[in-house]
Image (cartoon, rainbow, N blue to C red; front, side, top):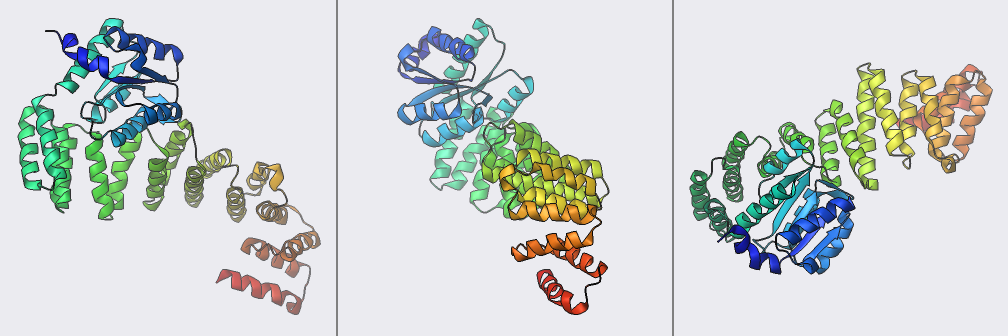
Length: 422
């Protein structure tokens, strides 16, 4: 009996979801699934992650074909969501569609999270053969996968030693047993044996250097042990090879700054720009990371790199006026007045009466205008509006001294400045 015949009952009763932003691609995949035996009324299509979520909420999806990048996220985000909702469905089959050879390698490294991958462009024959082989392996799993599944059941029940025995048995059933090594590591971790878990994850990565589960397992260990430099090395590899989601990108940016890997911020900014949805929280993280990276660049006298970081902040986070204010203050400190003035134009027009713009405008004027009486007037206007900024106060006191204000008149402002410095 052919594999196609063996699959007939499964295909005729299983709901299919196809996700691709390109309508013609969706239709080609739909026709392919129909041609190999799926029922037309059981095949659903979506052009974005949000549309896919709506379908998942009402349908019991068993087969998914998703493009690598989809509107609102990635195929990996969709697969993660489905696995969480269908954790008891061992026949759930997740197939990634990509036009990029390197992305197919990533899909292969995401063993268990991705059952197979399809490379565009494809012929009708090649895609049908791929799907039939993948679905057959899913419905009739190999001894290797069955052994791992048995170990997972034991692990979930708390029978850790028996689980490790099964996972160890699985090592001899596959030429590249990274998945079995991951689960040995996972079980060791549950036994609070972090060193043994780390060793197993590293063995899995020796087999497949970007094995997703082993990378994540190793990252979790390093974070728990507060080995932040080691954790950063691992998560940087995850960011490089696997589609970013906002939560992970925020975590990576935070860790990059914590470990002083400022030079990597440009890479994370480029990842950020590929995201279809950029939440306010993520924009804040990216803005802060780029600002700190730019500040570091100024400290090592790399003005061009600093300005590149600051320009990216201005483009990506226009709603956060704290960033141009901080950039202008920093540039003024470094005697880069003309560069600082450029960032005044980055303030939205409806924020020109707010504290961040007024402080920034005053700081630029304090270096450009020679009329110290005018600077004093602007400074006192800020002071009377109860807008307080240490750099503004320093500029105000400097102008007061230059026009001859006596010590008694300066004293209250000087006292307030000293309080701000505490």
